[in-house]
Image (cartoon, rainbow, N blue to C red; front, side, top):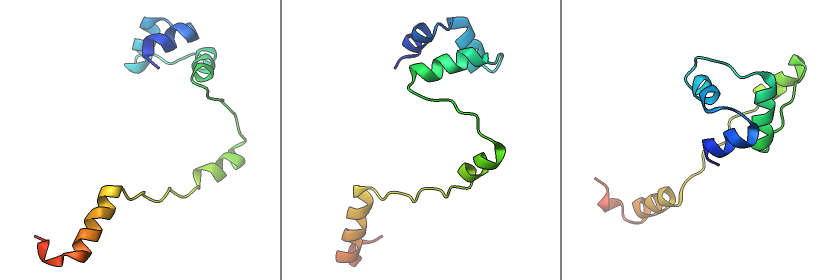
Length: 83
């Protein structure tokens, strides 16, 4: 979604978006809720105790790309080709 499309759908002016992205301004809560809605997001307020459980979630393990897998296979199969 383009910024212009999002601005129009959420009813946010170009100047407001520019000010927020530039760090000169903050969104009003109603504007933030409207933008979240247009992006298919839901905003929730949680008790701090419940939110701590979300912050403590472990980081997802890195996903090895097909290229990385192929390089490892070549390294194992042809060790003489290593630099």
